[in-house]
Length: 293
Image (cartoon, rainbow, N blue to C red; front, top):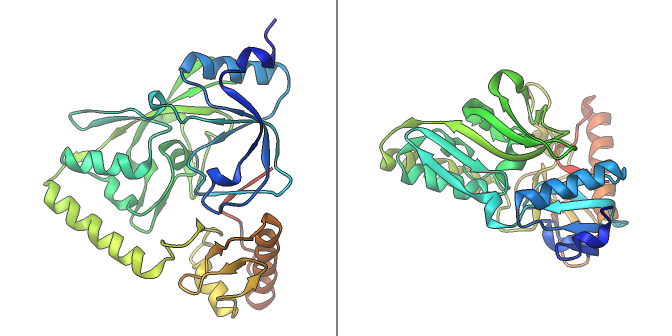
């Protein structure tokens, strides 16, 4: 009978999660797995399902806030290269869930394929981008998805075609699956022209976002027809600080953390922002980042 001891070569107990997140805060994972093969991943997921151990998948940690108490259950990080492979065949691109979105963008541009440059400056992995339908005012990743290969909690691999997928603003119906890879359909264009568009988007983001500071990207979703950052700024919250967490003075929808920051500080700041925006604008902001647990 399988036991946790059978995974000793790919599992660590009470692994600190803060170093794996962009905010650099938060407690440990009860069980932390780094499988080296798809078979090991399937075995871990199946074991956890059969033993009612909650499973969370950790990407690059760019859109994540881990509470100070840490996470009970299993955290799985797809860090092995097998989970981040990218292959290009004509205009069809296959990308592993563990591949960095920035790497995927650069690979497709070099191949003369356009589309993904609209995601320039968005951090994270392909898996995270699919799960949260990453994008901005210029487009979303869902526009290019043809299929997604997933792993069920029984350890079975399924391919979900476009007709079975549902994407919304910062959401998809892939929440209950372990994403393994996706197939994207792009279109050909001059690499120089694609690069020009990417640079224009990157310069705009660099000028308006605190990209050189510790942050987790946008904290709140934009309410329909509104800008969360504008609402927060209009509420007089720019540069507001609790402990060693602060609302960015460059973009009010970003929270930046400093050396002694805690998750409690960040969560208190999030609650303060929500309360003030609701009081002054009558708008209930919805958190965009993932908060564990």
